Amino acid sequence: MKTFQFLVCALFSLSVSSAAQAQSYPDRGVKLIVPQAPGGASDALARIMAQKLSERWGQPVVVENKAGAGGNIGLDYVAKAPKDGYTLLMSYEGTQAINVSLYKKLSFDPVKDFTPVAIVATVPFICIVNNGVKAKTFQEFVKLAQATPGMTFGSAGSGTVNHLLGEMVNLVAKTKLTHVPYKGASPAMTDLLGGRIDAVFTSVPSVAPQIESGNVRALAVTSKVRSTRFPDLPTIAESGYPDFDVNPWFGIFAPSGVPADIIMKINNDVAAILKESATVKSLAAQGATPMQVTPQQFSEILNADIKKWAVVVRESGATAD
Image (cartoon, rainbow, N blue to C red; front, side, top):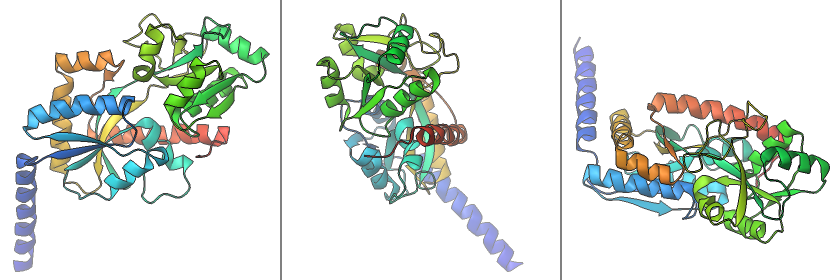
């Protein structure tokens, strides 16, 4: 009987301690790790959320970029961080759902070592071509690629979303676009502008200025719904491939083992921020659409996307650089 009472008291004490911990969280600065270089969609969305969370919490939320190895350097850092909620990760579908299939050996478990906390937004990608390509629409581009062996598309590296999107187009449209990997999105864009490659699949925020200035030609959006930044641009689904839908999410993760009460507090605070009109406006300027889900729903989405991308990795034969 005494043993039972001791266990009940211990569990109650643990519950009270966890609740108190969540109530006072955060009582100091929080690091938000971005496993990509500054300037991309992950970085842009992380900085929007860091500012909003800082205002809400009354504590600094500092964005730190830890790029390299396809995002794995940043993921490794967070996986090994203290399990107290003061080191978080802003990752995206292309890293969190693809690397598990792409890399055979990792210093961490991409699934077990992280807790999905909250999705911030979805950001579609856009198929763009250099102005010398004789295609004004995605349908024309497909016909041209089918009839012209050797047409190319560039990416930020083998196994990235940019790469696998091109491979998906090859699979569904029966094209034979040749992949040209680069060490990052910037050199790929430089060669596209210089006419050395024909196409690139890239996120809306990273390419919007080039589209608006007329330096490149946008053909289609990869998501089933049109981009808020470019509402007149048709989707690939509208262009004859109704099942095509790639609308990568960007979300916050914590190391596994962070108390559930803290996970829920962060999720609830992110959800409140995503309802603010100023946040919706800031995200729309990036071509992003807010997406509110529970941690459990986020986990289910992640698992489904891991399976989806595993098929593309296998069918394309993609390997990491």
